[in-house]
Image (cartoon, rainbow, N blue to C red):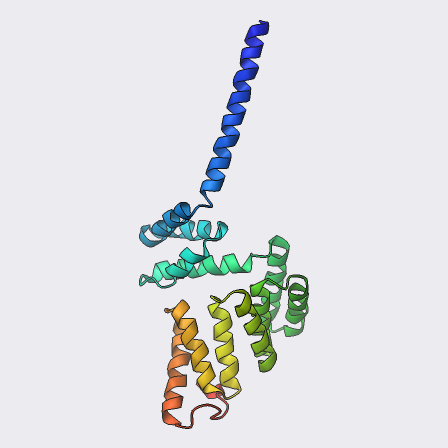
Length: 229
């Protein structure tokens, strides 16, 4: 009986070790480039449910490179899912508490309660200065309130932290346009389209800016550009 118990204890120990090793193997495998590329292939070729699952998992494992590639896919379902995954990845990068604060700020901005939105985003950027999405969202609220120079500063800060942030580039385009610098607006919008080439609102804004420049040969500082938005 004593030997049987020793044998059982040894077997349980081996089983527990094997289970732990298996769990760690699976966990770390999910962080490998192979696994991220595997999910990316599912995003490209799967059905709607598979693509949604793949985009979600890509966001959870921090697969920014794959999601950025997905933005360039010709299939609208693919680049739409990639955009959702990428924005979730950026939005949640500072953790759950900040995620909830960001949601509250966005809801306040949607209600046009910009004072409350800015109050929350001031806290986010102060406590988490390396969180690019915090600066981007504050920049968006600032241009909505007409604070274009301040918005430019926030958008540039977001881009220093995340050069692939096409939303911050779109914000720069809007601000430069409102300040009359159509040349600079075009540059920002073109850069945004290199990252997210299927963003139709950005493409339309760029087309209007370029048409304005063709019409007014003097180019930059040709006057306020709100008519182009």
